[in-house]
Length: 347
Image (cartoon, rainbow, N blue to C red; front, side):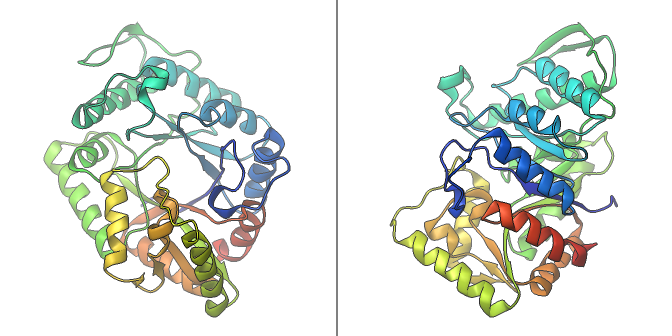
């Protein structure tokens, strides 16, 4: 099993106030992003996820600029097939790897976006995952082979060699909870990222992915698993729950659920359905935010004292989760506090 990896989240939104963050001055600037990245590397984090979506700053441009101004920080760059051609993306990431000594990770995203805005014409759900499979296959081969020829249904390259070579092939993260997504992950990804489901649900998905990998003939090293979740941690459990419930009450005032870019996905529906099972699941998984707040990693929160949240994360680790992408707002303060207080309990 791989060593544990801890990543933060770097918001690349134009408008301030993301998930309740209180930053106004400097929000969205390079200085703000670099400050967060430097705080992450100074307080125990290996890097941070940088999300993607049309209408947001370009993820790869931001990752490159931040990597140039940090020492150890590794951006987990989210990228979409259809926005990128695979050979172009393989070359860009290999170049960033060569320039930074290998400090680049990749999160491939297949879910729907504003496709027409950037000319992506593939809207069929199942075929998007077929296309993602080809994307991952080509990118991986271009990172590790020379004179690559690939003749697929969606992509073709002939006698293609990436220059410069990556220092090491970037690790490929992948999400998705549908059967189509799980087949891609089981055969082509390095790390399957989960959102904050209860332990029973994560255990079942891990078992299913192992079974799929054997059934479909996985050719790569064993699939690893990661958790992307919001953590609301304070000195005491009572204090953490007061903060979390006050936030949800504030979110409820808007009377409108915002599901970010994940509306309609199988994984998002799984999270939203959790609220019907109870407001708190397992030891401290808070489901109420999904009724009023953002989607994805903002749908469920782990809430409690440092020891309680560390204990909850350890239980995920016991299931086989070794990669953790955590966050809370305000980002500036929480990257330091969670890094200094929570991460030592998990190492």
